[in-house]
Length: 114
Image (cartoon, rainbow, N blue to C red; front, side, top):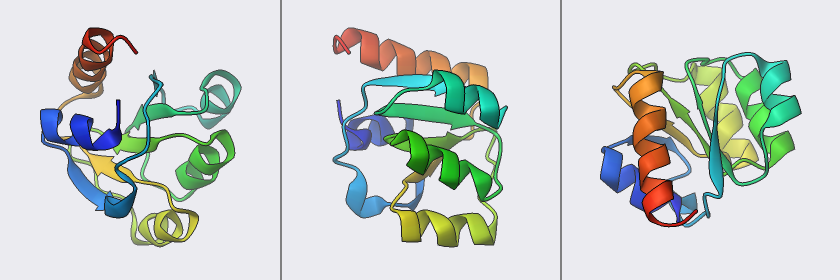
């Protein structure tokens, strides 16, 4: 499944990487502790977090994530957005809680057999 389908299904706001929504999502990871994300997430994951600082871009880039979803309406910091554009990391914003966002993404991926 690609990012565009998830963006549409959840009504996510695209803050960076509008031209990268054809990326394939192979799973997801929810977490705010960067070391945990680095240790346990996988390539192609859609990372769900409330962190907005620029270090999330470094982690997402290192792990080759499909993108990052910021929850609870959190917006990326200006330097985070700049780095996301430079590193080609899609940042999406959900007004839902992390729990609701993860559940909805899980359900979509499960139905599609991902």
